[in-house]
Amino acid sequence: MSDYFQEMGWQELADGETPNHFLHMARLLRDYNMFEELGQNQRLAPPASKQVVENLPNKVISNKDATCPVCLKSHEINDTVKELPCKHLYHPECIMPWLAKTNSCPLCRYEFPTDDETYEAYRKEKIRAKQREEDISNLHNSMFS
Image (cartoon, rainbow, N blue to C red; front, side, top):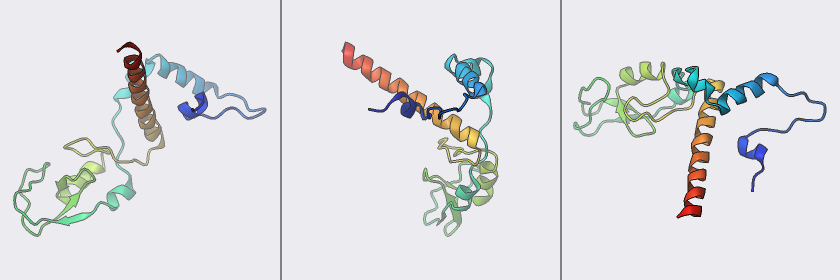
């Protein structure tokens, strides 16, 4: 079983190390949902990581049924398109400007990694909070069902 520091993704202070008071204040604001009250959770997502965008695979269209969700034009047979990890297909000229502004698929909102460390930490914390909520719900249901 993990201890408190492992569960929260933190490390204990070393001998002689002083606490970071700004970090404590940020945690206090987070714990009491003050970021939501102040509107800090409303900021826009940063662009997708340059490495992820450069490594998107190209795919050659073999059937005419597929359409680009951005421009709504049908893909022509033998056209080269970009395939996202969520398997959606886009014209390169449609998806590249989008990924330069935000880190998600325009159709299903699948999130890509970013180069922004603070956003990645925020996203990681959001996932941990959702997991803790599910764990508490499971514990409650196992006790009272």
